Length: 524
Ligand code: F6P
Image (cartoon, rainbow, N blue to C red):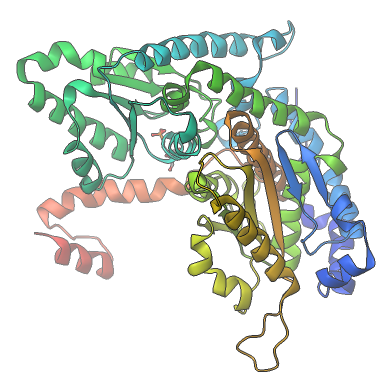
């Protein structure tokens, strides 16, 4: 099977037509007028996808722009790249790997003979059953009170976000901790609160070579040995588990129990592999299966829904419209749900590590912008911090609200206040307020999207995650990127390995003057 061709999006007729449309009317598009002249704007620009309802109506876009964006998607071969992913083609060209995270949530019954990935699906389910059996064993073991996940990037952000998001389903009597930073304050502060006998360490690393994770894992093991003395050796296998593709390195570390995954699962796409073990322990088998089913439903929507009603595609195309035509350089993520507090950080890696690239699949430099900056905080906290800038700053930042119809708490009055604030912010961004005095003037016409979940449960979280994975594939495919590698993280790692011994020796030879000066200043 050959991969689809890469089309430079800015050389397509659709891009040219979008540019003309933007210059003609897109730039001056006014949301207030759009709603005044189209009583059905909400109906047209909102849609139900599996577990997620989306209101796109308060975005700076009209039907003609969307039609042209859909044409752009066709001219850039989006469907062909999507289908290549689902067919298990090696769309991660620079690493010659497939991107088959969708298999992690595909039901076993769909292992139809003849599918190129049938063998991989069987392996997925074998590991899944072993992992869920282990999760149930830990859930039933009252002697384990604390589960510590040691991992970073995709081996931290996903499970950390999801365990918190589904805290309402957490098994009572177990606490979950996430240590990612090599900054010893993080691990040392946590260890002070733990007892070795009642702690389970999950060393999560796709490669099992990441410096931060290995340093933290070695320190955790030293602490464990110091706490338990002569008994440590026999107890260690019960208290350290590895989640990795590098089973050999985990064994060399001295870990007997390993749940594996595969190089065709990217780190930031790995939450539904063994990397999700902390979540499986927290919520149990039934909810974990619902989590996978929610993601699978969104996979099927992305794979099969017509482009014009395909939510990941509509969102990804809107992202292209904002980045390349309106020129918006960031997107603010505002989940109005405290349990989604790590959602912005999770999306940061998913989107910026996937699409923060300056060359196309062949390595040719691109003359247009790619990933926006993704940032945010839960509401209503954000309102008392940076929303001032969103309403009255000189630039425009599209905001993406996530709201949930039913809360997980029982305190009267809170939830309607929370929802009212979310709706009010989106409304205020759009309608603005005229005040000739200046300081109280809100220009309005500022775009936002509202994603609505009925409840923040396992299925809706799974669907929300898959929605964003596919949205990132969509914008990445339009830009002609390989969304599945991350060469930009390499250089810093190499330079840090060179600088670390210099902090001991004081050797600054060959360094630039700034790095040399700072290194000398930071030595003890
Ligand atoms: O930051 C680079 C990166 O490779 C991420 O892509 C990845 O999620 C993270 O490091 C952690 O890698 P690993 O799971 O191999 O420890």
